Image 1 (cartoon, rainbow, N blue to C red):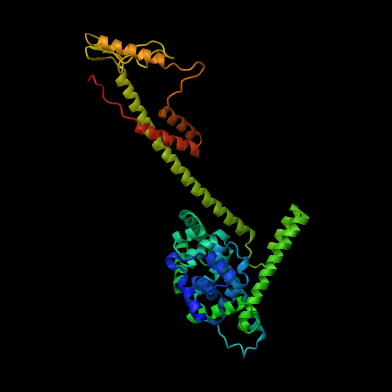
Image 2: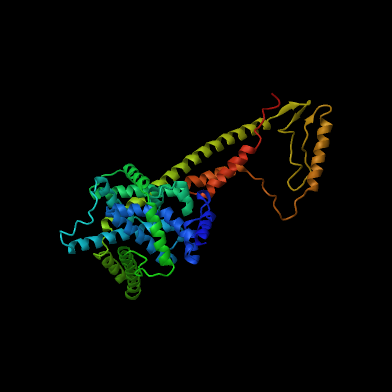
Length: 461
């Protein structure tokens, strides 16, 4: 019956195209001990975790022990992972720490053992590629979190940039920029270690490692059963977990606890001593030999300067694009301005039509004097047939103007002038090219000018 329930849970999980997020799976496992949810996390991130362990340890058995210990730590710390959607990034950090712990334990054991007994578990022969990848993990672990997670998702887990950006809630361009910065930083740091490797070659090396990483089915099954036994309440030392894996897991958990206590101690010291002493405490903590992976001050400053340089370069590109757009819109405004002036010149001259003399567009228009006075409009003074019609239309327009008098004390609303708005926006953009409101106003004014009917040729021609 238990096997049937487990099978139904596996079937009920959404498939690859509609699969749940890491946060949903972790929450399901944490609250209900959902076996299928944990197995999905194991299959999803297992290749990346095993790859880290293999590159660091170079011994198949040791790597598998570190692999199991990493996921046992996940079981024990499931309720403390924040943010829950970044389980992969968290697992990478734990896997690298676990592999380093296993390597240190093996070194101490070999020192204690005699040379005659130290042949039971030989290490695999390390190739130059293995040496590069070993140092690569050390540098990836030192990247700032927002850059490291981009490398983990795209380079180590093989996700597309579109999918990784969706998982992180970022624009695809932002993720691509972070990934490019991480590659350049890794290549520069590796060159300091005497490993000249370009960003392109770095991508090829990581892609090849991702493609070759695979978790044996037996290791998946063993890890799942062991982790679920621990999640059910069985102690690490109760026999459900191999002794070496249990020792490694406990060592990593203790190291994580000590790191948290050190952080709390540092915070308390900062609060109690003050800002001046806090700087000294921070430098003393950074110089602690136990923190062997801390970045030297000069290298850290260089990395920050490089990040700022790339951000400035991106801003310059954006500013150049904005200026080019402003120049284009400025040309359009000048063209529309010339067309408008030409149209007004064509409409304003005296014309002969209908046997009489008319003023631009049919005489003095506007329906009368300002405020509704008596005026002539809408007609032309002409010869027979034109004069009476013109006078009739003129007096009609004048009377209409009297009927539409503005209330006393109010000013008539000026009609919108998109050309003036465009020139005003251009003036503001020349002073401040990054003025977004002026750019939007210029765009709207140009659209209004383009919608206006183009002036026709002089009808008298």
